[in-house]
Length: 101
Image (cartoon, rainbow, N blue to C red; front, side, top):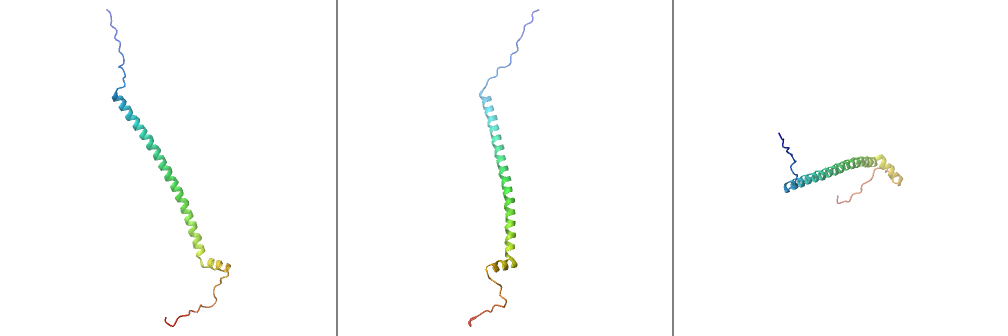
């Protein structure tokens, strides 16, 4: 009884054109995924920077509005005019009209 030994060899792995196109397709998908991930990160950073800028500009706007309202008040206006030597008249102003009116 002699037993014949069979050698089972692994099938040869060949890089055929089908495998090459498949690998190139996977490589292209990986590159596209990486590109889109980086692009998304940049867009998120830009949005966060814009939000931060908006908060700063809104605070500056509120500050400027409050200063403007303060400067427009009657008491402040009289004080600033007094510094320049302009005083409020203590009698009524007389209006001179032409005869045609």
